Length: 575
Image (cartoon, rainbow, N blue to C red; front, top):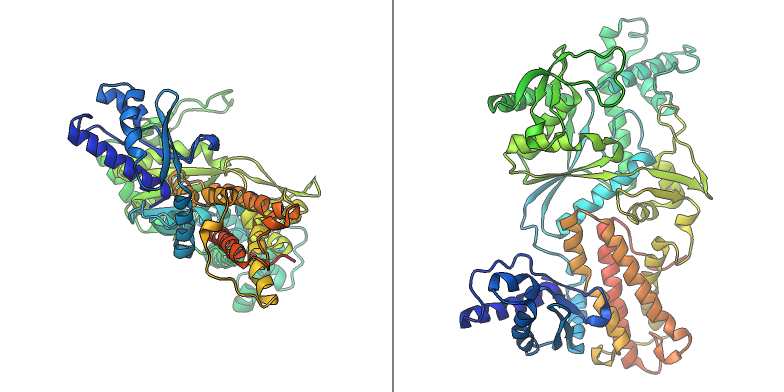
């Protein structure tokens, strides 16, 4: 329970009492009532819209209802004052004792502080990365990987039961191209001069070891053989090798999935036919013809019969083909069945996709709604690409040319923690620049450094005390001044930030919050530069030092907790 939900319960108790007295009608829906920090901190510590949202159904006006609530709020322990603002908002100020109590709670709960039960154990499937198994991970995949992994951890922190899933796209034409590319490397490993890699094949050197392994195992058995003899085998071996490489790349970021689902296995298992049969039984599959594409119609376009899903009945812009005119499944047909499989084992689905897949969101959401009767919601989070820069100059990458910058290269250069934190410094659907020079810059303009530095500063206090042979007494939190308790006000928002990040599926909120907390801590620390009496460590006033050390420890605890959700280690000291 957060500080805000605790005081929401106090307001709820007051409303219950008003109902029992007959002053307030019973049975009024309180679902839209909120307790949150006011936008302007000068207005108080908490603000509630209770009177604003309940007045109309109660048959009164907001200020009149607020006038009934405020006197009772003022009598609640830990509330210093409550007042009506504007048309009927209620602003509340808490006592210093309330903030000292929250500081003690942070220190007592430690790494449990911020954990929530709002998820109530509901099963959430988070599918992320799902890169085509045609090569190592590059920075085009990195952002979605970090966003998905951090979101999964935030949801777990909020009380959800999370499955991290990776969908292996191993049934499309790209894996046949991969197999043919590997066959070329296989022939090369046996001594053949294959020359330049033909256009359309994957030219990267990462396929050389795969070709050598196949040459060592099979010799020249498949050099001159018809592709019907080796294509399926080479495809299977190549995909397995690429997935091993992808798992290793993800491990560099500390990312490990619980489940890997194969598109090919979904097809072979009959799940596609089963999903389509269910839709057909509900009258949602039919044979028809789609209209001409929007915009300029190609000269060679002609209508063809297709097997279509009635996606428009579930919010899509048009009905969608699940089979082509030749009877082959479309990508959508496969994805539809895969999502049906996920929905059968989940209460909620979340997909992390690249922004280039935005056009397919509505159709998949329509399919899930149709297949589950609306029981299992699907939320799709779109992630924009990352533009790589080096000292402001673009770094080119192209998977097919073999000249892309791999994720492993980037992690080796700047470190896992820098990569992960940076990927969460902007909202996922906003454009991002990743400049190799700026992300390692030791300045307050670099949030990665600034948050880590705040934690390291706090930890340095313990080392300095130990070096001087000093032992701080038990902390008397009453020695903290108003400005120091102001830092506790920011720290106390952490549990609420966790719940909000889980509810909105926005893990970047953690990074934003930690940056705010770190900035406030640095500001408090820096006041000692001008006034020695305001330093955190004063060897001649150990009682005050102990209280400030407790404050620094609480801030450090929250930074550690937040960084853990982001998959980042907290720095003990800065180089």
